Amino acid sequence: MKKIIIAGPPGAGKGTRATLISKWLNIPHISTGDLFRKEIKEETELGLKAKEIMKSGELMPDEITVNLLKNRITQEDCKNGFILDGFPRTIKQAEMLKDLTEIDVFLNLNIGNETIIDRMTSRRTCKNCGAIFNVKTNKPKQEGICDHCSSELIQREDETMEVIQNRLKVYAEKTLPLLQFYKDMNLIKELDGELTIENPDFKTQLYQALGVN
Figure (cartoon, helix red, strand yellow):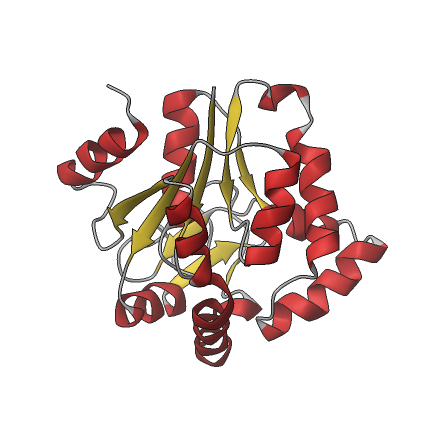
C-alpha cells in the first residue's frame, strides 16, 4: 500500500506528476481542488462558497476540506493507497490528516517563482472536460479549442498574475512550515520541480523517491 502526498508551490506540476504516479502504481489521484471544482460545477451550497474563496486565491477552511477528503479516501478504490495533491496545506490540516490515516511518503517539488508564474499564466483549461494545455509548451491543435472535446479553452480565475502572486504569498506563509512537520516524521523526499516529465531524470528521481523499480 502506498499513501503519498505530493506538494510544492501552486504551478509546480503536482497534478501532472500525480496523474503519472496514479497510473504507475494503480492508485487514485485525489486533488482537493478537483473535488471542490466538482462541487462548483454542480452548483452545490458548498460549491458556491468554494467559488468565492478560490477566486481570491485564499485557502479553503480546514473543516470543509477535511470532511470532503475523508469521504473520498474511504471509498473502495483507495483501499490500496492514494496520492494526495493539494492537501494538506497547513500544519493544522496535516494534524487532522494524521488522525484520519498514515502517510508513507511526502514528495516535495522544488521550483522557482519565475518558472511558476510563467507556467501558470500560460496555462489554459477546457471548460468542459478539464484538459490542460499551455500556450507555450503544450499548444492545442486549434487555438482556444480543446483537442479532446472541441470545447472552449479558458484561463482560470485563479491563474491570473494577481491571484498567482497572492497564492505564492499564502503558500510561503502557511504551507512551507509543513516541510518541517514531515521532515520530523522522516517522510520527505525532495524532487526537482524544474524537470519536465519528458526528462529521463524525472522518472529516475521519482522512482527512487517512491522506492519502486
